[in-house]
Amino acid sequence: MNGTFSVAGEHPPRTGMTISTVSGLRGPAEVTFFSLGAGTDISAEAYPVPRLYVGAGGKTDFSLGNKGNMAHTAVCEGELLAAPADTLCGMASEGGSVYTEIVPGKEFTMNQAVKPGEVLKLADLVPYEDGSIVNLDVASGETMKFVVMAFDEGTSLAPHSAPGDALVFALEGKGVIGYEGKEYPIRAGENFRFAKGGMHSVTADGRFKMALLLMLER
Image 1 (cartoon, helix red, strand yellow):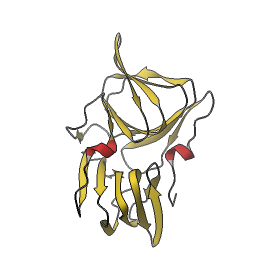
Image 2 (cartoon, rainbow, N blue to C red):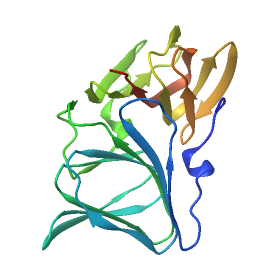
Image 3 (cartoon, helix red, strand yellow):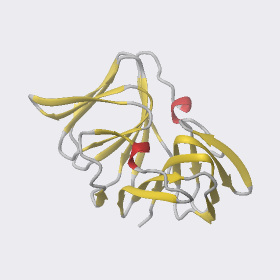
Image 4 (cartoon, rainbow, N blue to C red):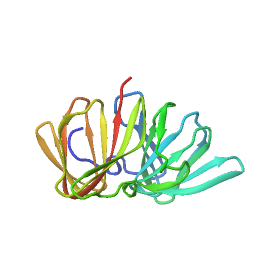
C-alpha cells in the first residue's frame, strides 16, 4: 500500500462482528488490525508473551488481570496499552472501535515510562525541543522497534532506506512523507507504510509528532 491511509478507515467496525486482519508487515513480530462492532467483545485470554495495543478509532474497553481480580480501562485513538504476559486480557466496545495489536516476541525491552496495564497517550511521551527532533524508544528488541518522535517546526529526516517494513502513526500536527520520489501529506490520525528498502524522508509542517513501528529481521 502506497500513500497515506487510516487504519480505522481501512478497517471500519461492522455491526455485530469482530474482525482481525493481518497487517502484512513482514518480520518475526506480529501486527494485526482489529475492529469491534458496537456491542461486541473478545473473551479474555492469557498469552505467554506481552502485547501492545494502539488505539485507532472509537473506544475499546480492556479487561486485564486474573480470575476474580480484573481491572478495566479504555483505549482511544493515539493511546497505548501494554498487556503483560500470562495475564488475562479481554476487549469490548459499546459504540465500535478499531485498534492495532503488536506482538513483539519474548526478547524486547519496554521503556520505564510505559507501565503494564496503564493507558498512556503516545504524543505525551516526548516533548518538543527547539530546532530538534526528539526520539524515544517505547519498545525495542530483536524483532521490532516502536519509537515516538517529536519534530520541531522546520526539522526533517533526510532521505534514507528502511531496514525492514515499517508503519507510521501520525499523532499530532502535520508532516510530509517523502517516499520513493513522491510526497504525501500526513496529519494526526493517519498512517503511512514503508516497505523494506524504501527510500523515505519525514518533514514537519509546523510541529509534528509520530510513532514508528519498524519490523526487524533476525
